[in-house]
Amino acid sequence: SIESVLVILLNYGEGVPPGNYGNYGYTNSGYSACEEENERLTESLRSKVTAIKSLSIEIGHEVKQQNKLLAEMDSEFDSTTGFLGKTMGKLKTLSRGSQTKLLCYLMLFSLFVFFVIYWIIKLR
Image 1 (cartoon, rainbow, N blue to C red):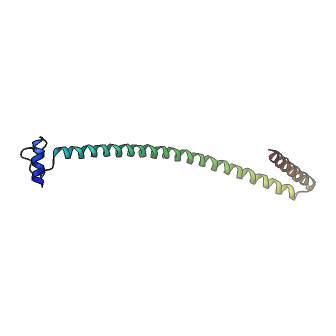
Image 2: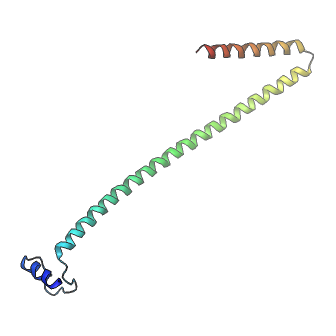
Image 3: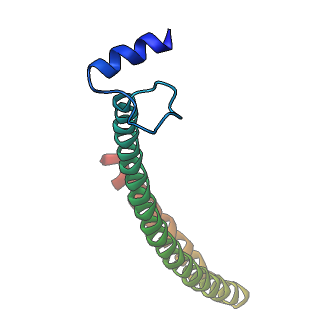
């Protein structure tokens, strides 16, 4: 029973302090063991929270860098689109004129360049 456990514990000097009868026989050593485990678990949780915090900060930095890279790529694509649009406009103007022979040479040269590039890629 609880009384016998209390008597045994009081004989070893680990009993309830005088005037503290609200514990109903629970020992201070039991509380200290729980406190030590709570402290250990709290420290473990604190280290995990710190690791998650640093990881989330690193993710934030990576997201900022990726957004910067995407913005640069967007501006590059916009400038390339403008360049291609101007080139196509010049080709349309060229095709409307009487310079059909020049346009044919331009198309043959473009085809030649693409074949050379294709050939170089195939040899690798």
